[in-house]
Image (cartoon, rainbow, N blue to C red; front, side, top):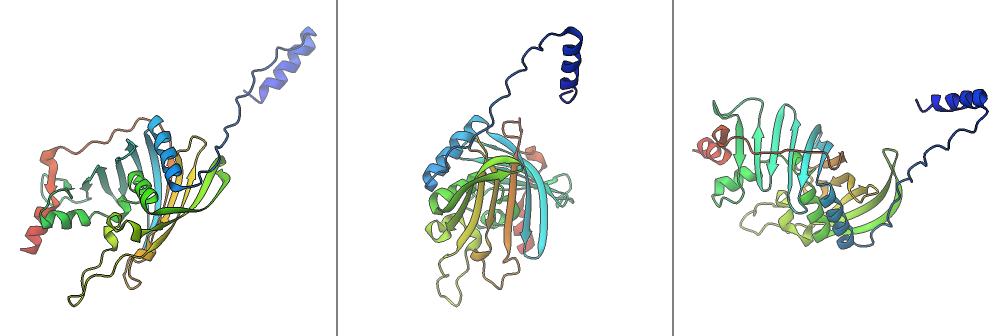
Length: 271
């Protein structure tokens, strides 16, 4: 209809010899704020922006060693905690705060299609179960990403560009895992021959694109420097694209009677 409008207006002008009414004023183009100059300012702006539209959908492309993984999902974020759901290779994962629920293609226990973990449980097997959650589920977690940037990151450079044909502030970041090793349990190495494990010293390159409302549009991070070079999964990289900020998202825990405790399964396997 927009293409036809000039033709219709011209025909009306010729028939009536009257000037057509002025058209509506187009809305102003979205503009970008100036890029943040430090990570505290950057993270504060993002948290404020997300509070106005605390949910989104996302797609993620990740490389884990020599294997590529792609997934779609949705998240909700209250400024501190990110709840999310995602599916890859026929497996659904839901993360609600610190708890994770996994629905594999084949149930480990008849009648209980979900496996649950709780890292707040002090039991050593519960801690092992929590550590077994796929790293892929952590990559799109905005709560984790913003905490890492805030506590261990620095801005290497910032510029204004476009992403998906929209204006975006683009940041190149460096995240120093040594400044917050508790945020990177996947990098921990066990003691060898009674000697203490070496400290985490990895510096992780990351990039962040924000839309005109200061909401994340894309986040990439390379975790590879934190793993031993000889590790089979040493190359761990993820690119997450966020869309549809503010669209309703509902993420709930599965019914309790359908959830098997992953730590109990680990105990049985180890018995």
